[in-house]
Length: 382
Length: 137
Image 1 (tube, rainbow over the protein chains, first blue to last red):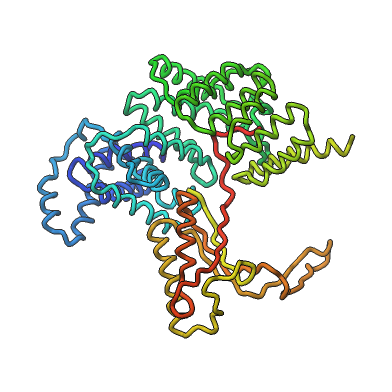
Image 2: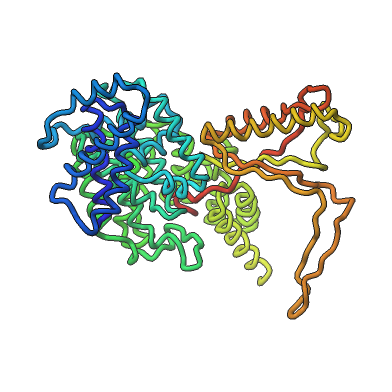
């Protein structure tokens, strides 16, 4: 049985329960129970209508749980409301579930956890493992998140931007645990793109596909990072690139530019270059200018300085860097790189070592330490 | 979504405001302190921010490799070691500001006279995962 296929039914089944009058929190628990039951039963006895099966089992679980409650009055109302068995309603509430799980009243970590469970169909244990926290902690985070959104009306229109931020966070978390969060983020964004026609949803999906395409080339067999310029481009996933580019082009053609489309355009230009030397840095700088207009993010201006360094030479890159706040994350790493390109290896080695001290993660720290060591070793050989 | 370590020191941190050694507290004050710590951890479990918490014995041993085929060398404890860790708590929070807020609350644990200890706790971020959308130079 395909677990991903099973999980893809999660949001529409949950939507049906909520539409039948179940409250979101209880319905979500019932759907999780039904998913666990499906994993147990389906391999031996796969139903002809998987979604109908899940709705029936989840609804039964929901009624059982409600009966166990003391709220008898409420339960009787619901039993009366139970529709006659028949085809599932045509309305799909998948989009509403994305909005609810990314509701602005939730903190980012709560929105991420709730989305992975209620939309993604992952178990609390899987989510806890992916984020390296105890299962009890994740269970609490999810139940608090459910309480936070319990008063939110299900049929209210939501904000696509908040949903995209949540999915972006999931994707960027990568793949530290058992669950491949990057692949899961792509699946959820694909599902969202099917539910709503929005150029930024397409932009984010394209961005994810284009980055995911480079995944195999991004790390060496020993786990160390391989910079973009040194990656074996033969290991990039051309299918994923082609899909990303196609989705991006269709989105850009609609002339409603947003930050994810602009980021995807930059990723597409990298993907398009047969070698690092053939990268169209002039166009990449133009996209960074566009991105800076859209987001006004200092991180964008930092990346722009790198692109300027490639397009117009390291001195121009350093001049662009000089205008930025030195306390920005990765500022020192960019300075080290540009100084190396400019031929000042002593300065570059010192800055790489300093950047390693400030690196926000182990992989980058090791990478920057190696860069410093490489330049220092060159000095002693001379 | 970042993990932080809250480190509590036996030695090595600046002196607390209410700096009376625990063995000079009343038994009730000790109970109140222990209760506060337990309640704090329980509250963080409830908010979905708790990862781990442990206390350490003050006396430890230093160990090092001593060459092929030889048993490791042990030494210590060293009374002069400046930095001595008493225990830790690991939290998983949305922001640095939240981590500081929680460390501040933990530092308010009651001590002598039932008054907050105002103990200095060390807050250290974990090195996180490498984000997918950031290329290296």
